[in-house]
Image (tube, rainbow, N blue to C red; front, side, top):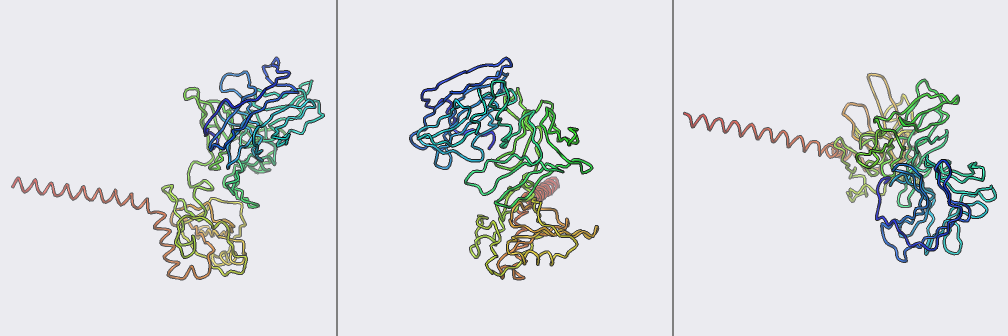
Length: 471
């Protein structure tokens, strides 16, 4: 998660550190020159949740300021080494965001004499580098904007972290069309999120292998095209090819914004400011405010209910076992000739978009389209008699499901092995989903109604008793 800090060790085992050409510029920018090295010893034994940092340089600003660190982190039974930029305690850039550099014994950061910035492990194994050898690089600097740069003798930028965005966009940073922020792609998860700048919109996507499903978007009016976006003090501003502002996602607070972040756990994105009173960063805007609107609010084959609880479609998990772990059914798995049928669930929809869509077809035709496609796992049908609207969406994932109001016209159909959906079983499954999905809400209402009825009985009994006593 973006703001969570595990076990924190600010002082690592530092082997000899050499500083060459450590300098402040007239603008207060601090950096180190060619020949600089920093070596960190890695713990001999693996310790879960270990996270240690050795800070190199920082900006000369009022806190929270930017700091650059060489970091060691325990991940998946190994130690990862990376170069990171922090704003206060929030990580805003990481050299290992897309590809981890796993090391043993030690990790060395060096700015070589020919201008290449590298991370190296034992036996001089290079795990990451900027590739700037021979370009006249003289210094590594951290600017007041948080941009980590390599510059030559004339202060011309030869490499910058702003050109390699991760999951955070800083104030003043600009992202061009076809650029995106992504969540950390850990080995333990098959999914990752992305915030992307497209020609007609900015949007968020859930990515699974080659599949991409959008779950939030923002478009300028009048179908205007976007050339780039920039984070200002008051919001995310969208510009056209003439550098003219065409739209803005505004901040709802009065404090100036410091960054935009894509949450690695939920897939939500927000605009953040620093609260001096609380001494931490807080969100002044979040794209999604309801738990059930998040792309993975529940596991695959799970339904998010009105009470923001998750329930598995139990009869579909672990065939004939009745399991409720919702796991193991991410794709259809019907491409081997296995016969299938569609199981219909009323008043269930999906937050996932950007899928194959057909219009003006019947529900049966929609179901048949999914059955004919062996990679199709589910179909969402929307029919509105008042507007004469009929839409069909095909999915390869059973994910992002949420309960919707009765009568809204949504019907979700899941592909299951043939025989699972016999008439009486189909009815039972439909009834089970409706009852269980609203079980918590119904239980609460029952308690309230029952309690009120009990109070009325008690009151009437007390009144009769009083009248009898008086008589």
